[in-house]
Image (cartoon, rainbow, N blue to C red; front, side, top):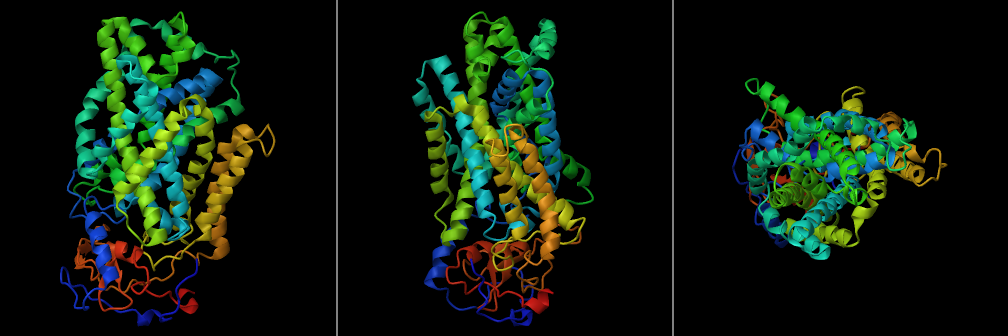
Length: 576
């Protein structure tokens, strides 16, 4: 894509807009095109989809945000993943693989979670300014949307198994039911999601923890069986290759940090008074999600080994299915009807808790990409339907039976994206000082594509996928996740130095005199009125208009089909 340099070529030509909070500018009547985006701007104010989340909306406490974010990891896929890798590679290799997964997620998740909570941006907006460019991050949106519908399908499959077991519902119909019930819950965005996560978490915790605690107390010998388990082929000796294969499947979850960030962007401003609580919430609900995820994977393998050892017939067929894992344990200490009821309730609660987040986050990713590429905002609910339709198709195609392959392949793409952004923030911004520390996401301020992140991600994902399918030799195939991590960690600093950081900012001045941050370093809460949609927005969401002595919001810039509101690029000498 080409840059618009037909307007003025010096920074001084951009209008200087003084701070006039809440005062509508006298810029004349808006055009028909301007009026057409007013509805889009109004609709996105419900939970600030596609844009900076202002402090006027962020009224939740740090604790509520953290609990809501952690409620989104209630999925049972971890149990299935832990069981699958343990059955394939044995307990020892699976545990080491889960450990590798946890370390990578903790290291990469911290800078992303911090930037989201500190600057109140979702991961797409962070990605734009962290080496990808305004349009370059579209490809990462597709990666994230793929994550949401893959795991929606996985969770939906688990729920359908529960409905079949408890109510006799055919699988094909269970897939449809598990999809349709999510749609109305996602319509109202963050307000409903936070309430749902908050009220369902205590019951979910009790239903999930009780079986594991029961086994430890009543069957202590199961611990020894667990550590001695060698996998379905009886060849679970410690192996670096097997560890990396197990880690690769687990690392398909690395993009979960993007869903955590969809909640963390609503953190209140960090101040001296709430600093300790703020950091605790960010660390626990950000990279800390993996501690809970890894624990669930270990428990899933533990339950699978117990079922394999104790079930007389058909144990191998059901050991990796979470609904059967919990049902078998519940049956040990309660009537069959109660065990079945609780197992189904656990599956339904877990599926709803995670799939409302999958549907919500996926719709944001699709909508964001579509709006940037077409300059049209169709409404988020359109893409809720798109995401659910793709997930339903995957379920009907029985994705559950090829789980390891699907997740192992996807992991290479997710790793490449997350590691590249994390390295750009940690190294290029804070060690080398090449990438601007303040995140930027507004059209006109960024180049269309920044090769630092964009090329690094494509190279890391491409080479690791070739490696995954044996293109670099069968001996290297198990190490595709390691290839993705190494390339994604090394290439961003190399390309940033090679390009001298030239492609991070298209211009360095947004034309507004008001400061972007307050005295505590938080995004400014000063409100100004967008002259296109006539809505009030806080300072970080605005830039000066190129055509009027007024301000324009980020979404109106995104939907500007003529480019008349977009500020011109700095001349080369100004950037130098």
